[in-house]
Image (cartoon, rainbow, N blue to C red; front, side, top):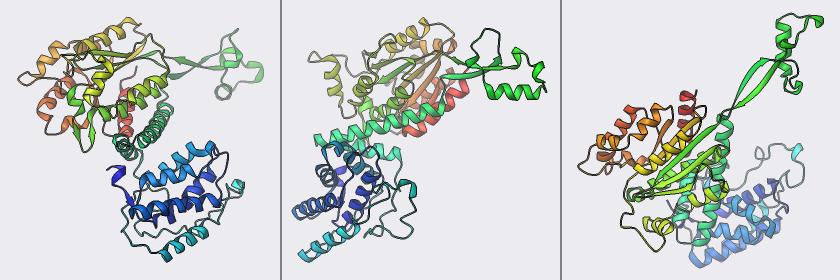
Amino acid sequence: MSYSSLKYSLEYSYYYIPEFLDRMRKNRNCPEKPSTRQGINISKLLINSYLKKGFLQFQDFIEASVITSKIECQKIAEETALDILLKNEIKDTPEKQVVENDLLTIISKINDNLTYVTPHGQGLENEYTPYYETETVVVPNENMPSIGVGPGEDEVLKILLSGVKEGNKELQKISLDYLMKILLKIGNEFERKIDWSKTSVIRPYQPEEDPELIDEEKSLENIMDLSRRIDEIRYNDFLMKKKRKNDRIICYVMDISNTMFYELDGLNSLNYSILCLIPLIWAFRREKFSVILYESNTHIIKDLQDNPSIENITDEILSMLNSSTKDVEKKFMGNQGSMTWGGTVPNSSIEYAYDMLTEFSNKSEKFFFMYSDFVLTEPGKSSNDFIENNNYLQKMIQEDIKVIGCVSPLAYKPIFRPYTLDILGKLEEIGVKFAETSKPSEFLNDIQYIIEKTRF
């Protein structure tokens, strides 16, 4: 599904304009609340676009919303418009011939709908009563879902990705910005959910320790359980909640070989990997980590000792979403090129990751994430050849490093299955855990399960 394939009748503006204004007025970050006049201006722009083409397109709604908004509100307007258009499963409305009288009627109806100002717009948030119980926004298409019904964030990401792949540079930028916003949001939610960087330990208070660290609630419960009188309370009856931070060291290795660019239904394995890699990097951004890309060569994006901006790292990875294998080769090799570019040779990258992970104390919790389609063997070679040549994976597992294979869904498709099923089975036998990258939310659930099951 692509943006250019979406066509809307003019009647869709009945739904869109009131919804856009309502959301903008409710947005507390919007310094200038939109007026009824803005709704009228949006309708005029949409009508003008409709008369030129006979239908409206995705970009028409974005442009009309941004152009009519105050400069300081345009970024919010852009995001709001995208949210409305993407999170509603809009079916193509039947095209209809509109005559002059119909246009006047549409403008009139839009005007009527825009006279309502939400409680947020009036500054009456705390006195809000359900508005839609008594009145409803007019949505002429009976197949249009109710407000808030959408395909979910995983589907929104795929739709945005189609926008990134389209030729319109402005649309690409809008899509990339919004896509990154959703990925970081998913990462933040995962970070809060797993909260795996800290573990709580309750222990008795010792004299001369900082009394600020006493857990008052637990201490009171303990004293009551012991039935202590005030004159019987001792130092060690008070309990301290000590937060112990476990050092974690993480290596992310991502395959960028030629097979990762093979597309199925508009998406390739690299796309899936990136959409699942960025939220994970963001969620664990406070940990010590490295990012390595490989094909026949090894490309280090971040070493364990480097401290570049996390935003720069995620931006660099995201920039490859719309890249071909030639684009990526030029990015890393410049105009020199390489006779060996594009092959699948993870050996040196895995060895490099092993060396980095084993440099640090065994007290650290260590993870190795390998993003790939797992087409790792050449025709005529068995999976045992790969295992024997890459015994560093076995060494990692033997040294209690958690090895997690992040598998592209294309690995299970008929075109790659002859090369992948055997290798995936062999890796599982040596202790590699797997999570599929088809949907970022489900991928992160799998990662959480693996981490909690294998943690110390």
